[in-house]
Image (tube, one colour):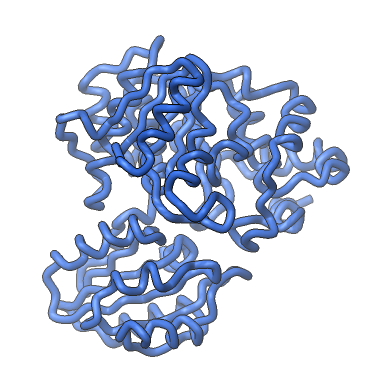
Length: 402
């Protein structure tokens, strides 16, 4: 198969959550464990840090990888979803997995994958772990896909477990309340593995403390750290993520990481890991900013930062996925902006017609566009040099304009 045929085949296996939604969510690790056995347990052949949480887990994972790269280690990085290319999900020292490796993995295991009815996400996790093991990485940073307890990545036994924070996202899978969601996220806390919680939140602290007690591990809240760390990542929310990454690295045993490695690692995240879509400035005049924040907690911080920008007028290109609770996020957006409502190009993208209608209920007024590209072109044509254009609402909207 060609690379395109290989990817098409992977995407066609049981619906993929990012594209299809709830139908792809499987509450079971059985398939992942079966695949691990077939691959001769690759996750046992490398050390790892497991990173979960509602917001910031991607940025924190990239920061950890960057710091460890600066310390001279060969570092695997597994994240999801991807923005442009599937291979972004699996990297070593910032370099994406070669397309040939993806083709060879699927060709070699296709019969088994079909027989076991493995999902896109399960086989991708297997591919990542197999690649990291064969390339003999010193350590891999593994970002949780969804939840934690029953996420495919949760077959690893890491050196450190990290949970950034808890917010209301993916409630249809993880629970309707913060403690319910925290219970699922706390599933990555393992026996005798140090655990770092990024933010101390009173509503969920007891969930983590209780789980840590059961697993006989020390729990550490990164928000207690008074250090101030600079990073090349520009979003306000990165202040919390830097603390989480630094505290996690300092809990890592058997690795030599200096203060200089930490400092350089945080200042070179984009260069070292090629992270995109986090308060990324795409051009200056007019200033175009994109950000993948897509839930209430993430958007609150991003939109507050947007208010501090200097502009004559603000243009907002907005698209979301169909299971988004609009009543939670639309009230956060400024009423004095010009809106360009659009549908991200995935099956679970919300109709731009419906989004425009709901937005009007919150006095957010603008035109609708059938594609992100059309919305972006219209905003660029309407904006003058002193305006700001913000693109967001969904990872998939940002992916189409980067």
